[in-house]
Image (tube, rainbow, N blue to C red):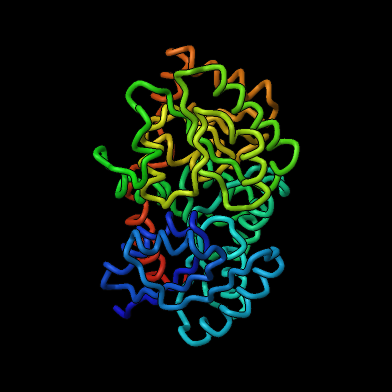
Length: 377
């Protein structure tokens, strides 16, 4: 059998985390010729993940520039991929999730009549402006894709509603669980004093992430005020907040939280220490998407500071609760988990809907099966 030529394209830290174990699985499969192109939509954060998983890209578009807009990314990635795809001529391009790199990677492949496989397909919030621009990126990518690797049955159902042929969909679980299980260690030692000095056994550690565009402005101020009040009102709480590098978020975090003794504002963490921090947390407050998949695998309750989520499976399973961005609601929900063991255990012990850590193997087999019947994709 002729080797299947697969090119994987990604550009941000979240994509890299979720695609790194898949890149390794593709490289290990003798029936596949694997190449990797990174766009570096993120630069430093992307490089950290590549180093952690010992991955060297075949192509690096290095598009990141300070102050870049979505339009800037779109134009540079589209033009950069044109030359790479013309040279490599892969049988199929794999893109992941919902970033600008994802959509533009699929579009660039379509322009050259190259098949597209969409990993983490079928997520929907139902609101094209929340999360923005991710919701539209994944919808457009789904329209361009020939194969759809859906993490859950719910994602499968969303694709069917969009008119996708069910024969082109494979339910895989989420590759982030594959990645997570590779890096979490019970005896992990953090770099630097701050994280190692926290008494995880006796304190209730709340990990916070907050960066989404739709939360900029008043919603983020509400969130930070709520965190401040929770921390000041409970000496058993330690808040760890790896603050996004965006200067606006850095400034706001310092303004509202910089003088609170049990709030630790730290630099963004590499994936390995961050995954191990999640593993030692009591609960997670986040507006991120990916953490809604990771934390349930570690048995950690997640309160999502957004008005909707594209991951309703986690809500239905009880591992995640969407609490909005109002100060009073955030405070009430956090206090409920801090004070009620029953409420806490209900979320912490819910079954993770995102799989068993074997998603990458299912994707590889899905690719090979599809190309054994090449006329059907």
